Length: 151
Ligand code: HEC
Image (cartoon, rainbow, N blue to C red; front, side, top):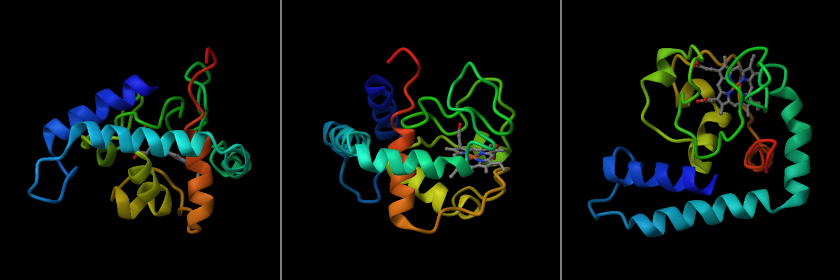
């Protein structure tokens, strides 16, 4: 989990695509540390995770949380936090996601789950979005705990 995030953020920092709006060179170490701290704070908040797990019932109609269990529709969401967008091998993503070099950081997941069509126009995810900020945070906190059955 941590290694995936670290590798991803480093790749992102090196590619410099949409990671930093400013002209200053981003401090890679600081970016990684900030993302890790954000993820740790979310997944460490038991109450928030529990709330997110309840809200996830609107996602589980389509998404499995286990790479060994087929999803009804959509890719599985195991290890999704820190994963590359469109990153599940063999899943037939729409071009909206396959064409992206982004990562599912906490912020990017927040944008996507607020309004999937606005974040990735043309995405095949038929879901209106979660308007409430706190509900979205809760779902992301729950997603951050989906680190496989061996952890
Ligand atoms: C009606 C079915 C459906 C529902 C409901 C749904 N999704 Fe999806 N989701 C999809 C499909 C299909 C895709 C693939 C989209 C594409 O290829 O453009 C997807 C993609 C995603 C991705 C991108 C994964 C990746 O590997 O890049 C995330 C994250 C995600 N969904 C999270 C959620 C969450 C969290 C919820 C609940 C709040 C949710 N989805 C509800 C069908 C659904």
